[in-house]
Length: 324
Ligand SMILES: [Zn+2]
Image 1 (cartoon, rainbow, N blue to C red):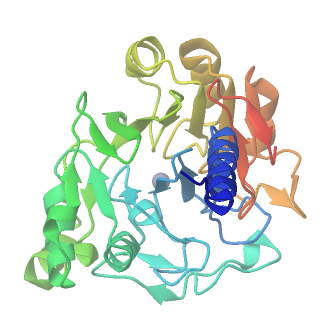
Image 2: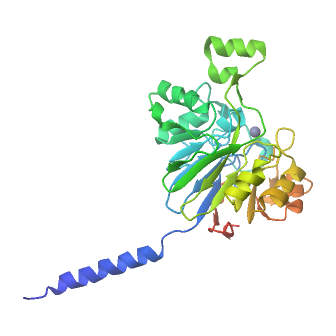
Image 3: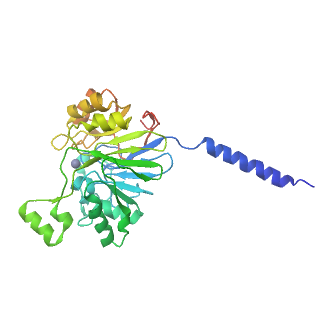
């Protein structure tokens, strides 16, 4: 039998390609904040994309700083997480496009009600919306109203797990409130709620723990005060090594409380500050005397600033390896 040299060469080439592809497989989490001003950390910035090493892309709290479903920074989105129903997290309105310059110049001219920025994005991307409490049915009805698939809104209550790609998602308690504003509901009921100065019950607000395909557990605090579960659930059970911590005060833990949570309860390798509710950088540098400044000086874990559009990579131990 005659050996076909061309086939041999081809087989060798395919094998070599396969090997090099295997050795270059991603192992790190990529976090990209989507704020209102490129390269800055501004007052209403909450949104982040977390990309698992397996390519699964999760959008956390889109809020007001993602410029709708057409925002080019989004790319593929597999799941949207919403910690609770307040407008700055669900997105009652939003920027028209990511801009450059002073955080104080941020404006939110696009009204996203009654559907919300979250639902518009999830619908356009065919993404799942993964939430706890009484929120999934609300989002399912909104998806249906847009002509989408209500089954894409999925429930994950405390202690449960939903998997999207290689990412195991669970919710954890947050000490906050979780009313749906009348304008997000619309119609007669929305008007009645507005007139009474009340909101509709959506169950308890949540944080999230994501366990990635490389084993890294990431805690997303949502809006919360100090909770016992930050120690028992987030630290003891899930062993979160990377934390996204809200530091804004008034509505959530302020910088000293947030630092105490990080130092005493969770003890992660790295922290990304979030939800500062004031312009925190100028020209990409931290502004002295801000909540971010105080949080960074009090936290024993390394604190990273979520500069909009700048991707940071974290390994399976929660250590920042690139873009830090
Ligand atoms: Zn908030």
